[in-house]
Image 1 (tube, one colour):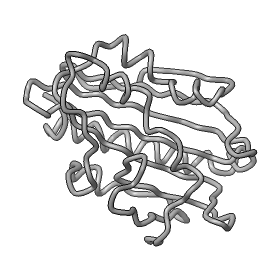
Image 2 (image 1 turned 90 degrees about the vertical axis):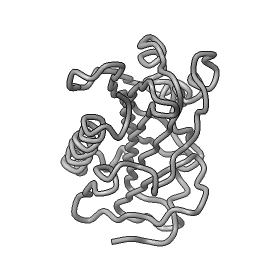
Image 3 (image 1 turned 45 degrees about the vertical axis):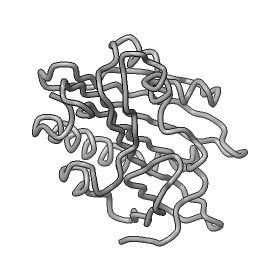
Image 4 (image 1 turned 180 degrees about the horizontal axis):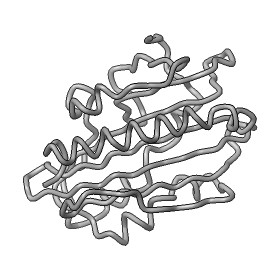
Length: 204
């Protein structure tokens, strides 16, 4: 199911603090957001849990998004939970320290509490890494649990490197009820992005 108006609650948040680090890295060039038409097929076909709906994106969403799914309308463009995916292409590859240091950058910028960062399982792909950060923050007067997963794949091909950012925002009052949906979305996106990397749709 697709709705026509994007959720305004999550749009002001930056896609990833790693994006800024890439732009400032002298060894990285041509950092640009990819549109939904440019992303791997395995990402376009990702499923969402029952009761969630995909929102139609504007031509130039800010921050750049290729997907936003929401659940539980609260009225006035606000939702119990939102799921977003952003994809960026660039030339070169960052050092792992920068990837790890910036994995929880958005959470730190929001003064989040109970922040945790962990590495995600990855196949043996050169110059690839995946990290997941989570924590709780106050956004516009409401307590929100946030999970942001960052996937980086470097490539020797010009503009062949990829940064995938998968973010989940859940109203703290709804988190226990939506834990199953969060797990389903996290697993589906993880496997979809790994399939894209293994298939050569990002990095190598």
